[in-house]
Image (cartoon, rainbow, N blue to C red):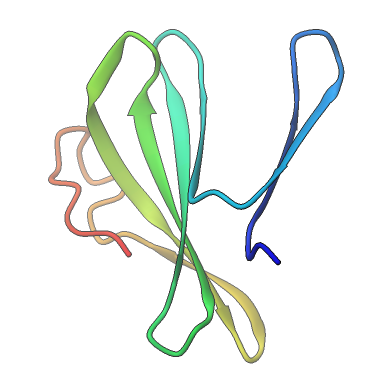
Length: 94
């Protein structure tokens, strides 16, 4: 059984779903967001949220933060450089 499940809609209004996978990337021409899925050392879900420059610029990205599963439920942790400056180093993400 897959640990991740992707769902969304397409341009025709239909739902798109898939089991498995490690990332999704929703993007416009000049802005986008990628979410990557991973596991912590103690086998909990962790998702990294990354700002991208959309379809026109595949290079520049900035890690915004992570959502990690904890015993008390999901927790958001912003990346130290998130929002500091648009050219701040992305750093290493989970």
